[in-house]
Amino acid sequence: MDTTNLVRRDIVIGSRRVSNYWWASVLLLGGSSFLVVGLSSRLGFDLVPFLPAGDIIFIPQGLVMCFYGLVGLVVSTYLWLTILWSVGGGYNEFNKQEGVMRIFRWGFPGRDRRIQLTCPLQDIEAIRVELQEGMNPRRTIYVRLKGKREVPLTRIGQPLTLAEIEKQAAELAGFLQVSLEGF
Image (cartoon, rainbow, N blue to C red):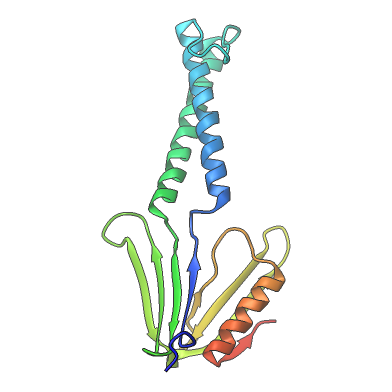
């Protein structure tokens, strides 16, 4: 029997998105620069020649720059760690051979780092698509299970285009042979 048509696995990127790399880098560079300028204003000489701090008085400007620099470095460190740990990354697997749906995501380090939801394919009633336009658009694909419980499948962050979400939802509903709701 051909097993290639019996298993569908969709990879979820999670925190390893290009935008997270961008913002982590920008915050690291900006936070470091602010901190160096703030410290230079306190010490009275430039720690880095291309970041002059001669006109900055330590209290209040230099102190505020040190504070913003530290905040930028803390947020940057947080972003780099979520990228390193691949928080939110994982996969959605629909296995007709075993009759099981597995949703796996990586969490933050600790006791519950591995987040896994497993349920029988017979419990899947439908695939539902939620489209919410406006200032904060939301385009999400849900698996509706028996008991009206809904499990989101799409990534958080950049919304998919209407064509992409329609294609993914239709392919998944066709693969699982369940109805598609929400358009």
